[in-house]
Amino acid sequence: MKAITVIPGQAGSVRVEEVRGPEPGEGQVLVQGLLLGICGTDVEIVEGLEHGAPPPGRERLVIGHESLGRVLEAPAGSGLAEGDLVVGIVRRPDPVPCEPCAHEEWDFCRNGRFTERGIKERDGYGAQRWRIEPEYVVRLDSGVGDRGVLLEPASILAKAWEQTDRFLTRTSWRPRVALVTGAGPIGLLAALMGVQRGMEVHVLDVADGGPKPQLVADLGGVFHTGDVTGIGVEPDVVMECTGHGPLVFALPEVATPDAVICLTGISSGSDLGEAPLELINRELVLKNTVIFGTVNAARRHYQQAAADLAKADQDWLDRLITRRVPMEEFDAGLRKEPGDIKVVVDLTL
Figure 1 (tube, helix red, strand yellow):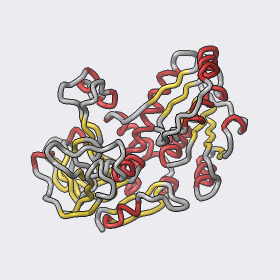
Figure 2 (spheres, helix red, strand yellow; figure 1 turned 180 degrees about the vertical axis):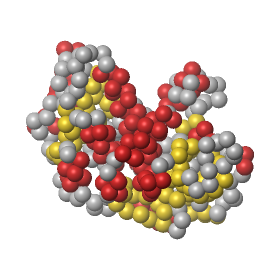
Figure 3 (cartoon, helix red, strand yellow; figure 1 turned 135 degrees about the vertical axis):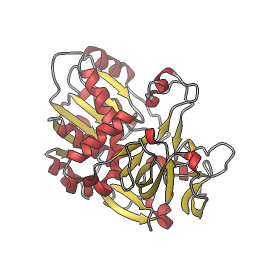
Figure 4 (spheres, one colour; figure 1 turned 45 degrees about the horizontal axis):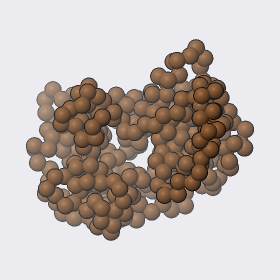
């Protein structure tokens, strides 16, 4: 079968090659790969940057963690059947395990010994067939179709909103206004979930071209460009999806008292710049502001995200997938083109 592989740490090493089929010991569920989403983590692995590690004893890693597939074989009692549309969970608990991993909270792993499909020490989903354990499979409503490839990024936002909701229980007031910074796939999914929670949603991005403004408008949200301090929005909740340091530092200033700011983005720049730390400290303390980071997702977040996608406008979700490339053009899919939001690889071509 064909798979997309890379030598982590070596730029220019990505290729599509013939590899052995998945062995039964890799999981009782055999899946035909349908689609593979491309994200910034994949770009960093292919460019030889900080992410990526092959399975022990191997040089090459099968890349890809945003999966969509169809069940070919499943064991009795697994709750899965041939033909089911499924997504594979990315992270696996560490072997110790630490306390969170022992309670299926591998997204909160405390010792860093977790593994991740397509990223860290486990082959990913960028193959025509893959195997997986039943406990790491999430079955999708058949009506979601190809849009199920959005489940993994949506799970990140399901967790972000879950954790935000927990922080908001510290007081009696309820949030009304949400600001999402960044209108990529993560930001737009964050906006979708904010609207589903009945909030007034604003989305800030660097450019007003392409499909993003209309996608936000069709959610019932308001699209903005410019400096966050000048758009006239005072959010109770912020979903920060860019990782841009100067923007992050400005958020406590514009947020309302008792606001919750969730950071989902990671900066890719090396310019640390200068931050007004004393002013930021003052804003956080005097306004009871919570600012926290979040990464990865547990099984329950995949399940929450699956429910969120199922109840969303399916035509709207379709418009997030702006380009499809065959396996042989995976490398081209890493390079964003004008109007791109989510690029996916068709593993059947």
